[in-house]
Image (tube, rainbow, N blue to C red; front, side):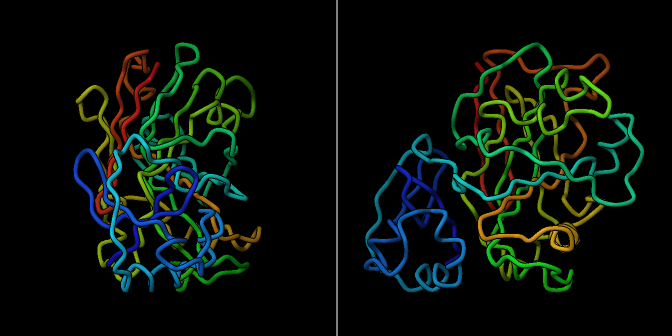
Length: 283
């Protein structure tokens, strides 16, 4: 069974099955008789043991509604993001195509659950659907050829952006504009991609009030996931549970002419193929 790792009531769970409204889960610590931790953050360094548990457990499941899902990576040591990592997105933002990954930080206090409300602050709040990488085995100077071996799994993510704050100075304040309260939801869970042949060609996108705004195959990334992981590790050490937002495809509200920003009452659904869907209401 593929590992799908979730947090519920601040405890680590494996997702065994899911529908459009709920999922069937098992508690990791209880299913392993205490040999694996209940704290979600302590599980990423034990990812191989989670795989073993997922393939062998016969523990009975419990059913939970999606609204009960917590952020699956609640306290990452580091949060990275890549700017302008899709050519068409760079073009719609009026920016040159980068020659190396453009990295900025997001702050842990902006993390949010996969089914939650997000407060609209100001009149320039925008959506950006992204693939989020969660590190399993950390390290420095990771070779690109082995970078996927250091990845626990993938999540869907929203890099919600306050464009006015983001572009309020020179240079732009990317980290600030993308780190307001609740602006970094990920989920609905961390899905293990080991052995998934299409992991480099999944579809990522989102809809606003049912209107599809973004829909792109991630093979269109300028810098693919293995390149990003390797590149970051040449600069700083990566740790289990670190998360990396890998960039937004084209179709953001800021790219419309005139721009179309989010308003209170809007509902954004974000889907990563092979992982799942998040739903957020803006209030």
